Length: 269
Image (cartoon, rainbow, N blue to C red; front, side):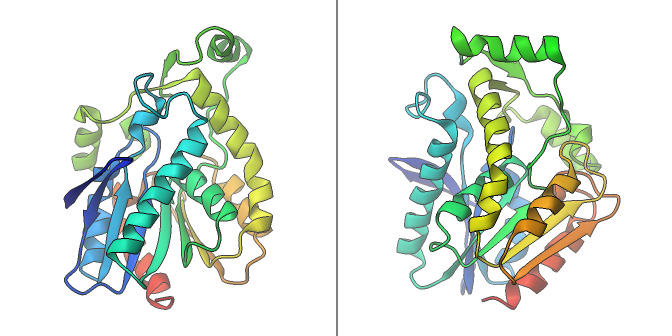
């Protein structure tokens, strides 16, 4: 794994001596680019280079992008990394892959720019969270939009809801780089973006694969299935992994997920 630096973007990358295609990886809420290590290393050995964007600073008041719409800032970072990949890997097919909230972001980006990518990979995409705030909690969460939209709230999940792997459980709990909270403003944008995903399904025409966790404690797999059924492209596939938790890229049994994804990617490069 190597770290890339650009005036507009931070990213990590993993390169094979002879690459066949490229992954552009988008992490989920509370995660960061290094979290893709296991998946990127697996595919590096298959001849797939991976570039993982860092999204984490956008929700901080000291970030240059903070005053912008968060999701537009996310899309801008993806586009910046895409341009870096195009310069580094000319002529290579680029597959956009996102996990959890990164899956929602990737889906909406691909829906708006289907000309850029050769395929879309969605891992436990967050089209609808299981977290449903009650009336009082909702008021506390959204009232700051009128006077302090940057007010932070603790993330409504913990490591044990993401993976059963002891190594990653310890890593998630002790990770100093992991985000532990999100702003009132970003919470609203996430709910809005989940609602707009239905419209995006009608615009998507790239090859797409959904990899769904069978025992997902953070997002509702049924919402992903509904979106999947609305996608009009004929080249689409949905695979569910029974008993697996939300974060498939770091979950026990992830090798099966990677092998399944490789079978799909190999036929499209």
